[in-house]
Amino acid sequence: MHQILIVEDDRINSLVLQRFLDSDYSFDVAYSGHQALEYLERKKYDLVLMDINLGDPSLDGVEVLRRYQKTAKNQNTPSIAVTAYAMMGDREKLLAHGFLEYLTKPVDREVLRQNMERILSNPPH
Image (cartoon, rainbow, N blue to C red; front, side, top):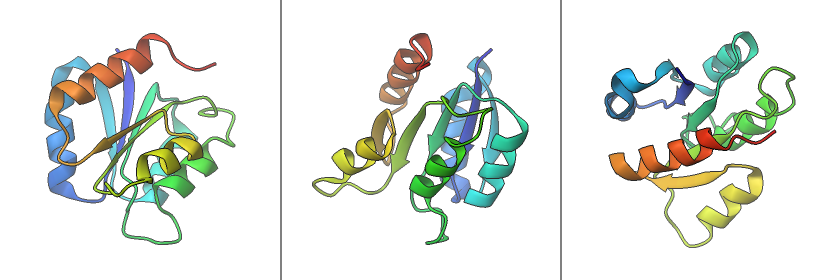
């Protein structure tokens, strides 16, 4: 079973993502960037679903991604940006930072699952 880390500071949005994954995946939930980094130090994940605005301007989703990609355990772990940012250029900017996909909230369950399956079936090395 694939190991997924959900990084989402909003509890309702987190519950929505958890329901979308339900019993098909094993997942942990981090409610802050600091908690996400703690999880990523302890455990290897197959995919990270990352909110960008985590309530701490010094440790947003982009910074969490940058930091965990420097660790040996999760260096190649792919990440999908799941964000309310939907302005022109946001997608390109986040993909340039290293996210493999960009999904805007509210997230469509089928779009999320299709992107997850595509990435999980062909993970980066």
